[in-house]
Every structure is written in C-alpha cells, then in structure tokens.
Length: 335
Image (cartoon, rainbow, N blue to C red; front, side):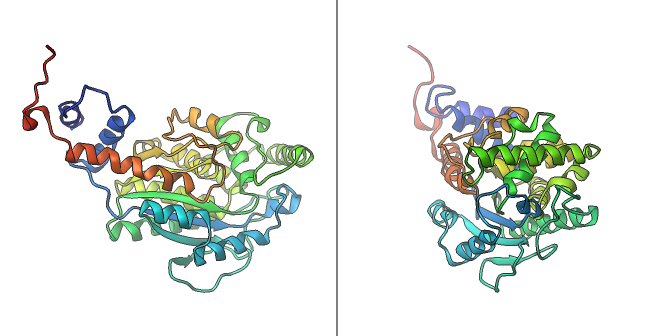
C-alpha cells in the first residue's frame, strides 16, 4: 500500500515534499500499521535496569550502587525520563533486569531480574550464560506484549546500568567490526586517564573472547541483562507491528544484536536522535539510519525517544487532519 499512502501524502494542500522528514515518517508509520490513517495509541517507554560485573575493573567513575539508587529515582518520579515522558504523554515502566540490590514493589515497577547481583565480569568470563541470555530476551519480549495488549502501538526503550557503556562498546566493536578505540567514550564522565584505562580493559576483554562472534554468543559474552531484554523487546515490538523509537548508544547496541538476528526489525525503527556518546553516530551509519534530532544528548534512560514522540504525533496529524487539494477546493496546478 506504499503507493496509495504516498498519494494521500502528496495530495495534501502543500507542495510535494515540503514537509520534509515528516512525510517519510508518516509513510513509515502508516506502512507499519497498514493503514491510510495512522494513529498514535498509548505510547510507552520501558526503562530496563541492570548491573554489570565489568564495573569492578574501574571503567566508570560512579560506583555500582548508583544503579539501584537511580531505579529508586525512576520509581519516585525524580529522573529526567519521568519529566520528559510526562511531557510527551507516554506511559513509563521501569524493569529490574538484574540490578545488584532489589527494589521494593511499586506502581510502574516490574521485578524481572534474571540474576540478582548483575552480570559476571567479562574481563574474566562471559557476562551471561546462553540460558540467561535467552531468558532475558524472552522477559523483555513479554513486557512489550503486555503493553501491546493494552493498546500501545508506539514504544521506546531506555536503560540504566553503571558500566553499560563498556558493554555497548564491546558489542559495537564485535558486531560492527571496528576497533574498540572508535567505540569507547567517557560514559558518565571519565577523565583522560580513566578513558585510557577503559580502552585497555575492553581491548583485553575483546582479545580474551575473540571466538565470540555469533550474535547471541557476543551478547552473552559482553552484554548486560538490560541490554538482552531490550533485544527481546525490539523483536517483540516489530512482531506486534509497533513503531519503535530508538534512543541512544546503549539501546542502539541492543538493536545491533536484534538486527543481526532479524534484519527486518529496522523497518519498524525510528531513530530518535544522534547521541554525543562516542561511537553512536558510527552505529547509526552501520544501520544506515537517519536520526530525527541532534541535541547533544548522552543521558540514556530513553530521554531521546521521549523527545522525539511529538514529531511522530505531527506526522500522523498532517496525514489525518490536512485537507487534500480536492477536498479544500484548492488548485494543485501551477499557473
């Protein structure tokens, strides 16, 4: 139905193509939903949180306890993603994928932890077993199915986990076949000495696990429980014909895995923004992706996805609410 939907877009009361990216965005959403009148229904963001054993190598300036502290901040409504998802009109859910310390029950919080304490230290051994990876993928998919059953047709994913930029950098290096130096950034604020140490640790880990090349094995070796859950969430969201708002560096590393497992997942993805975290733009180039926004963001949490939602609302609004040349009685012929 691409040609029919493009005709609807082209015959609105405007010069062809004059709404730029909104036009291609509206086309994509309509094709995902298989309708000439696309809608945004119950948009949601799921923030997956998990701890990483690699944090023991000093690759982050923040202690591991910050992960569970930030989960508490999400639950009580004090984080950036709480404010931005509220502004965007998005349902927010926080999922414990494997944080070192448990959090008490709360509204909008789901305890789906695979292993209390987080992943193992991949400087010495694989972060996860194959069974743990498969379990995490399934639990991430289950959260998406939960929201699909409530009517959600647009979804974004966020993450929280001290040292998860290290996991994402290794996933990027292995899956995109680039040197680790091009993938490693300052994360939560490393100084030059810390950045050099992080590069050395990750380079040694990649060398130690040189045989891990299969997508699932790579994910098990270097990933995190929250990243694995996002992989499952991507695949389930595509299966449910949702439009997926892709956030920054960590979430895109999960997409690299999902894409390696099923390239068709990209048809459902809208890339919200280009992160300032080192490596993200190269990830986007690898996926041939054009982000909607470039705001210098590097926070994660799904904040870029929340900021991009109004553009999706605008894309479906012009399709549904603009008059056509015929309905408005406006000539579509040049004088």
